[in-house]
Amino acid sequence: MSIQEDANKLLFLSKDSLEIKKEYELFDFLYAMHFYSDKIVLSDLKEKHLELRANSIEIIEHNCICYPINEVVSYCPSTKSYLMQTIEGTQLKLKRDFKLESKVVGVNLIECVLHELDNGLIKCTDLNSGEEKWRKILNGKIVRIESYNDSVIIDCYDKLGFTIALDIETGKVVWKHLFSYSKIDYDNGVILSGKDRNILEVEVSTGRIKNDLTVNVPIHLGYNPHFTDDDGIYYLTHDHSFGKVRKADGTILWEFDLIDEKGEKRKLSDWLLLGNGNLVLQAIPNHPNGDLTCVFNPKENLQYSKVKDGRRISSDYA
Image (cartoon, rainbow, N blue to C red):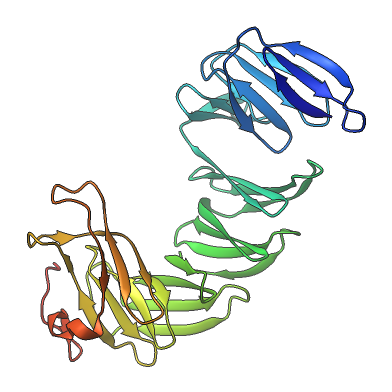
């Protein structure tokens, strides 16, 4: 079946002949359309929701503030929040305001609940057939998910934190490491983690540790690595100084602050490395001093580096 909007009607058409199989009167019903793996929901974002089942001409009308997504999760459009039913003993409880995360990878829909449940549930659905391909219970709360090629990368928190890669097609574990990752460098195929003076560089496709560095200069709250090049790893500090550490021996090559025209240090919202070694730096927007984006050449500004000869000469860290 296919669905077509016709003025104040929904028309269910045969895919083969385009013959009208069913009509549904909308009566000036203004709606937003929400897509799920097995249904479409037309919602007025208040208290009327029409649930259209996949591969069916069935319409279910919900006249309440929420509509069901599945057996245990409902969505409230007016507050943009979710309700989840959990059974504790014989009691049915509702958990509010959790985040339901979904990600489409090819023909696969990956779904999980973030920051809820000591044993996080993640599942994969085939968008073509609507059939569930796999589901997995992880021993920890899911913090975030990303995809890389044929894997879904999951950052989890138990007592220490761990990162796990699952095969998207089968749900099987590709690799697992006992760290919470900072960033995935998609251009270079590595995942980065920083804790205290330690920085790890791991190959995303295999889980192989490429570099395990101890940075030569200690810092309060550690280093947050973002991306790499052939000889170094680029990082942010907790107060958004930005720098580069050499892979060979953990030596900091340089570290700078982004200072605007009024002499105020700015925090970065985004930054990236160009092929010529320059950096594009973008400060967090809506600042009283105005927005700031610039191209920065570290080698031409080494005299302003906060770290020289392996020693931090300018420090605001406690």
